[in-house]
Length: 541
View 1 (cartoon, rainbow, N blue to C red):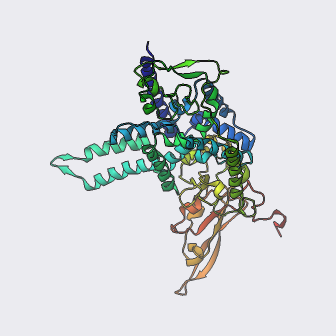
View 2 (tube, one colour):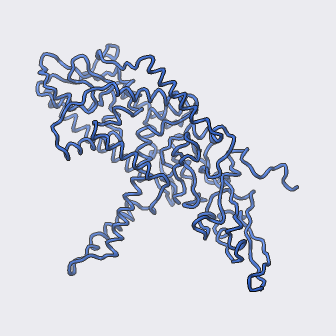
């Protein structure tokens, strides 16, 4: 069998694997939701567990990793043998970039041109060095750039909600307009589609996220960059690609470019999406190659072939040469970035942001930030849409980490999914009984807006919805005189700080929708002994 024929078979196998991998990613994403009975299996975190960058950064930052994360050793082993096949065959974000590149060629149909290796492709290695240095000192910013976290975050907070809104909003608009020609109604088509998607695809109510628009725009920009350079993100930015590329320098499956059959036509360079220099005998760059085999299939002279060889033999003269000064500069950049993240008073534990309400089970803030991937998985599974990506409430270091926004959704009393699905256990997997005891904040009453306090009107909504037994909200009756001189008795609500867990359902259900009359802040949270407004030593005095 000729190399080209074998290459065509391998390319089709790769495409099938890419499609199945992307489908598996979205199926696991879809499966991560609230269940009336049971809970999602550990398979939900599969792609995070296979990510060696998550393993390395979490170990450096927190000095501990969940046992399932050791699956990343499989990826490392495959990389040492086959090179960056995770990037070219498995990574769902890489598959999206691959498809975007192909779609751009189809739409524009220009004559393809080679996009050779550029020293700017070393940028991903410098970024990797900087991020690992930051992780070594406890700043886990890997999740901002890691491709699995990036894709999951964008899908959870922007893409999936946008698709659901488009389907539901479009079906509603057609239903209300009821366009028809004689007896033929368009709703006969749209309504079955709407009902099927509601019952079997989306299943849960539509979610909305603060900051989702920005996350979606950034993701769109990353994809559009493929029109400028094929797989731009993979070439120049991806730190996981940098880690796997560094490990690929001694891979066992190697590209052999025979100089005698080669006619220097350049077809292999044109077909290469990575700038791995397959057209230059002895200069192939394994650290950049995705193992896509496009170069082999493009060669009509069988000058190219992948063959196994000893890892102790040098592959080619082209090696990853970052330079000592540039590497030291990258490390210094990581330290500078760490300092910038830590200069604020909140980052140093001098103050606590009242709006920063972490999910139950979240570790102490410094330990939490050492582990959190900013992946959005906890936000996806939250049944009330209460968890949202943090802006700057936690400082720049806490960007896109989860926080509870009670105005939008509350912490469901009988749910502990956020801890069950967290891939790095930044949110501890608490049993439901233990989770129900954890305090994430404290409700406070604004008497200038509360109906019984400010307007002399009856309202017991907050007390009705409190899930605790005994309830954390109770009433004291008070006789007041209205403007007509009549005296009426109203029940004025109070909060028992010893019972309140800060779940936020009272704020979510308050009849004041613009700014609730009862609001939850981060005070009294279990994870921070210093953030306690009620001093035990003064109790009863």
